[in-house]
Image 1: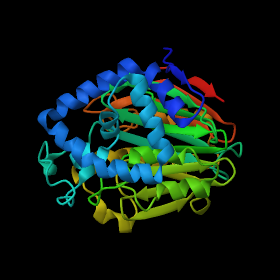
Image 2: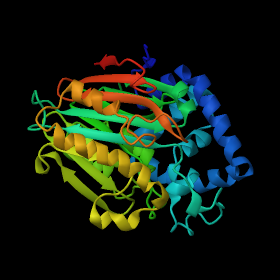
Image 3: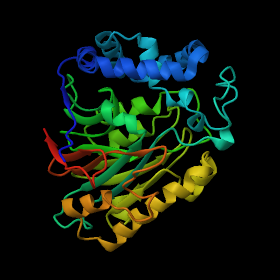
Image 4: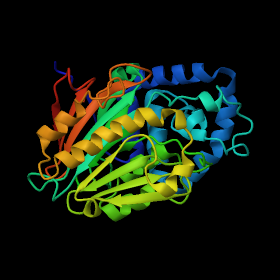
Length: 367
């Protein structure tokens, strides 16, 4: 079945690119705002107040990202403050806030008991391979993204041609919020949600993703992922067509780095901490088993197919159903696979399937 994702084309200054995104995705962004505000009800105004220091820090450190957000808000006809708050997972989601943020978030009562908090409809499985693990000497990435099923209708591929930045191809929710992507300087980003107990006021991790993809080399992209003023962190898998792959397993205040050059060329990760010194930061222990089953499968592939990785092996991985219902290709539960990707970082090609890749064809996206 054809499952291509619609493209939003943009060009210009950060504000102008944002305005074009907002205009193109106006209906979807309006729906997302309505649904998010309804979820929080009378807490919304308090959350807006809490988001102000996040915004101030983002404007200080990532002014171009704020300009893009302002343009998007104007293009979509949405108040900027609402759109910014929609990017602050550290405020909106209890499992991202963690258990140690009483000072920062004391005026926002939790929406559900933290001990029973499931992941907010999110999960991802990643397998990455660089030489000598690849058949053709290229850098290959395989990524499945699990969200609430309704997110399928909110997906876009956004092509960002922003002045003074590399061109970016990104899978986005609502055209604006980047999930994964690559740029024509040879940098690619995939990764996984992590739930840490040290999140804090800072630059939202979702907006750091945008900054990572604006970089022209691996060192600068990694520095962005490890920004000292970050509010929290994803597990960021940053790849370079020339420099290999680094896995940055982070929290707000700490991180563990793994390099493909030190692991025989392969890296694998899902939605829980793996590095020993990061284990104390785990805030969502109830979800670790679901994540660990997918991670075990990714590690199986990394070992079994080392030296053979190419498009076919990556596509086989993202369609894998071993350990179902907690499989890499996920069909049931609070979150399901809403899109799948295979990326050839070296050749600058990205194949995407909307929905489960076992049921839908991949479409090719290039610069």
